[in-house]
Amino acid sequence: MLIRSLLSGSVHSQRYFSSANPHVLKPGDVLRQTRIFTDDDVLQYSKVSHDSNPLHFDSDSARNVGFEGRLVHGMLVASLFPQIISSHFPGAVYVSQSLSFKFPVYIGEQINGEVQATSLRENRNRYLAKFKTRCFKNGELLVLEGEAVAMLPNLDVDSERSKS
Image 1 (cartoon, helix red, strand yellow):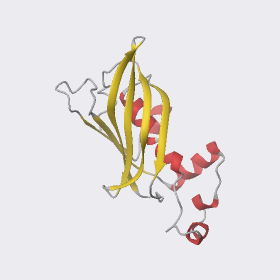
Image 2 (cartoon, one colour):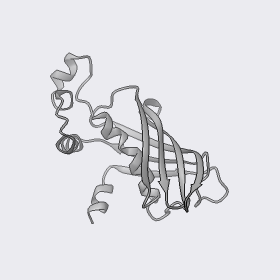
Image 3 (cartoon, one colour):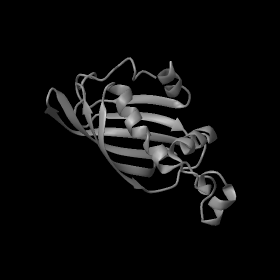
Image 4 (tube, helix red, strand yellow):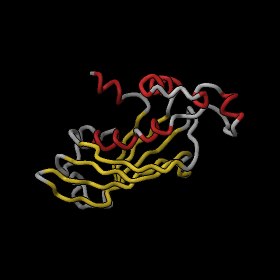
């Protein structure tokens, strides 16, 4: 029930497969989710992370350093990547993530996160998957990019969890 409530709300999933079999992950396949980060998301993330930087809570502080308004924590935006992977591959283990923040994300903006499989290799009855990771706002402005590695239990995309 907790997982269902965490995944409900402002998240939308999409899959784009380059392979002929749409249920098996192949290099080039892209998995996407869309999310709008809210005031409550920022507050809850701040409580868990203990990051209470005024840029996330005070519009004047954010504007005083050149931003348009309150910012969403960069790591909260980046949390889209493990969410996308684990929602399609239950039991996946996140191994690493590199991140490069390009532009700020403001509360209430729609963010499109995507992971694109770049390489897959079998490793002890599991699969080591490397993904190109990116987040966009306004459909085209790249705000965050990087690379993730995850250990997947198999390459079968969980079609029940990936339905919108």
